[in-house]
Image 1 (spheres, rainbow, N blue to C red):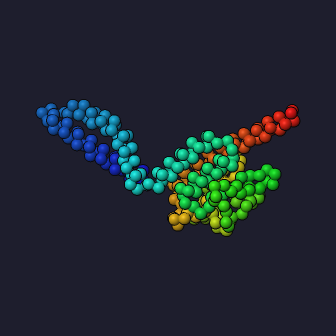
Image 2 (image 1 turned 30 degrees about the vertical axis):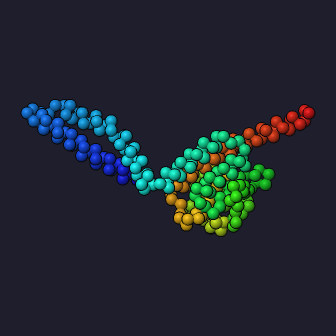
Length: 239
């Protein structure tokens, strides 16, 4: 997309610039050497118009050819804003799964969070997207958890990886790590789309960025809940 509209704008700009120079030169044909402003003025005009015109072309291409991607960006932006308003882990996870599951029309959205008591990543089922074929937990030493800890990037079933079989067995097409401060807090596992369409690589990049923000929000919410529990405990002791 970037190459397409940038090439278009550059070509139009060059033609427009050459046209302005030609007009300026012809209008001063009686002068042996065209005035300096005949060259500077078109350049200044192009410099002033280039960015707005480029943005307009970008917007036009988004509306005509990249509607799904543009809409996904808007949904992710909406989730980003919601993350700053929630300090409860369950509510936060529910909003993310509801919004992503509804927009992407996926068959399931599974969110696993680390449980320090069991030492495993346990399934958090929210928003009505319950796992049908997936596991309710992955041990902290499982191949999937270890791979996500080491690489900290999204996994796609369509791309070869050492955990491809695990993803296939659990019905996952995309797995997004929830990493913060070099710690794997959990991961989001997305099933196949109801439309039958596969995940675009660019969309996975956007979802991966979202997962990073979700991880920070979950970490903050967990800290808040820990402080609240301690506060409640000390209040009960004092009373």
